[in-house]
Image 1 (tube, one colour):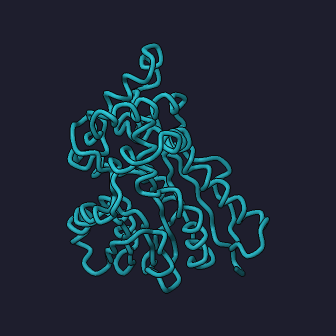
Image 2 (cartoon, helix red, strand yellow; image 1 turned 90 degrees about the vertical axis):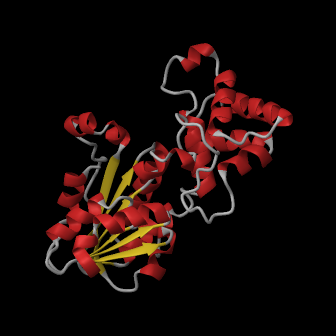
Length: 293
């Protein structure tokens, strides 16, 4: 996603050292490795072991130039202990996770309501749906899903789980469809989309580490190096925008310095959206570490 644009900003070069903080299937990493040959290196981080296995297989041809790490990018400074030339973040859920019906990310397939990116995490989406107070559940759906019917959906969930636990994606979808009025269901896409997004974000605590990780990325990047971030919804993009702007303005003491390369987010071309409809909501922002930092 946004591959050409990412490469334009990162400017991979032979001998360069790069970090892909959300390596996924390895698409971005493959191109960075190709353009940084013969001796460029990419550390690929992902907390999903299934994604990391796919990336390792795809990038096998690059040998030790690809260094896979199973971890959360919130631990970036523990993982990378030397200066790098560029860092990439690609937030949100990956196609590997969405396309596996057993993972519980999709409202289009019936499965256990899991949604964990790291299968070793103790809390599933089903745990949240069945244990949180209705008021707290509504808060999550409203905050992370920006769902206008959050209170009603949470109330319907509360009533349904009195009868039996909500354990599957199909159960939850049916509850949401019952909660959202018919007129609202006919517009704005699938009625469960926002609630599923909210539960996924809450289950994986996705927004908690973004700001700090962006700061750490700039701290480990050499002068002239760049940090790129791809977001897929306004909550992620808002954090990226504010964090990059604060570093560029020097508005807070103790923040690393950065120069904005994107005053507005870069969006995918119409051709890319036709090829890959999932790219439609992608937004890319980038900063450069200035000389003398």
